[in-house]
Structures are given as C-alpha cells and as structure tokens.
Image (cartoon, rainbow, N blue to C red; front, top):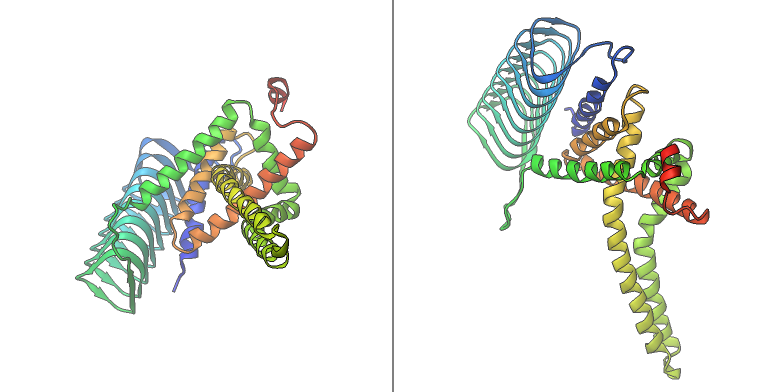
Length: 365
C-alpha cells in the first residue's frame, strides 16, 4: 500500500510548482501554467498546471492535473494523477490515476481508479475508489465503495459503504479545548513565516536571507553541524550544569561552598532554559524562510521574484507538515538546517562587526 510519503512529495510538487507562473518565456513548464481568479479547463492534451482562486476541470485532460487554488472541482476526466492543494476540493468526475489532496474539505463523489491520499479537515467519500484510501483528517465519512485498504487517522470516522481490503483507522481522542482544523493551522503557519520573510525584505535584510540560503548551498555540512549542535545544546547544557551542581554539593559541602555553587549553577541552567525558549521561537520563524526559499529556488526560473520563491517554498513546507509523522520529521529537519544556517551566519557577522546591515550595503546586496 502506498505510504504517506507519496502524498507529502505530491503536495510539495504542487506548492512549489505554482512559482513557475512568474516565469514567462523560457519557463521549464513552457506555457502549461494557467493562472487567474477563475480557471475552466476543457479538453487538453498533456499535463495541466493551474494556480488561481477557482479551478474547474470540465473536459478530458490527457495527463496529470496539478493545482493550487481556493476551490477545485474535478468534474471532467483526468487520465493521469491529480495533485491538489486547496481550501475545498470536489471530485464528481473521474480520475484514472491517483488523487492526492491537501485541503480543508474534500468530497470524492466520482470515480478514482487508483489510490486516494488526503490530508484535510473533513473528507467525504460517497464515490468509488479503485485501490487504497489513505487519509489524515478531522472527520471522515466513507459512503461509497473502496476496493483496496482503508488506512488513516481521524477525529471521527463513519462508514456506510464497502471496503474490499483491510480497514485500519485510528480515532484521535477528543480534548476539552476547541481544536482548530489542519487547514487553519497550516494557514497560520504560512502567514506567520511569510510575514517574517517579507519583513526581512522590507527592512533591507535581504542579504541576511541570501547568506543563509547560500550556506545551505556551498557549506551544507558545516551548516548541518551547527544545527545539530544547536539542538544538542538544549540537553547538554542543563544536564551538564545539574551534574556539576550535584558534584559540587557532594565533594565540597564540608567547606560550605557546595550548596552556594550548586544554587548558582542551577540559576545558570534556569537562565539557559529561558534563552533556549527564545532561541526556539526565533528559529521557528526564521528557519522555514531560509529552507523554503532554498528548496523553491532550485526549481524556480532564474528571474522569479524572491518573494514568490519564498511563498512557494513556505507553502510546500506547510503542506508537507499536514502529513502525520512525516510532517514532524520534516519540521525537525527544517529546524536543524535553518537554525544552523542562521546561527552560522549571525556568528560570522558578529566576528566581522557586521551585526546590522546598513542601508548602503543592503541596497547593493
């Protein structure tokens, strides 16, 4: 059975693929990208890439359909795979390949010949699935026919249809506090990181972003080492301080200095904990900006504006973060790489006495 990793890869392709709309002539998609508030796709030969507000597939697409939009409706037929990141997704038509979706509300009322992989707030499947159904969602209802296995996790799960294979669904235990939908969480993460990135660009800190991205390109090993050291320090410093405090209390207690030194070291550990919390919060905002820009820049045309590259990269990271388990692993990797890049860059600037970029130097960066 296909794994969640397939969905993560598809979502990243969808999100980063949208940046190609900024490239005109010479884009690696050669005019295949369609953009606009409302996009209606009729009979098409080859793959289709769409980036807009409302996207509707009403004809037969002889290839893959890759879409990021507010609302998506697959009413016609897609001969290949359908990859979607959107708010609401409705599939009353037919998909010959896989259907892979990250969205708020997803309804599959048509016919999907192969696998359906979904990360959403709500998933309804009154239609037919030819192979496996894999999901991570808040509420799931399966009223149609699934020929293969059903595997996933949900806050609530109901089935009135049929399942041809195994059915493995983990039901999340409800909590007393209101729970936001995965889409709302994703939008919040994207908005906060993107605003931080725009702030760096607006206040002439573009060079800071460029330096951290360059470190991932030309000094990946040292950057990874800085990031791993940063993460390891959260455990090494407080534990080491606590052990030293105990040793001083045991071996030098007869001089009356042991308790004093122990209390001092515990105070240092407490201070470090505060610094660590601030550092984690800072890295949590800056790391996705660097790593997202670094990934998207490798796929975007050379003349793409940096804010679009940044937006596409962040959208991809946030979308992958919706996938259970894999999203957590990717988040740790982003924190390590991004944190290492920023710490390395800030240390380098401090050594050369260039902590804050001047307007003149920033303008020429």
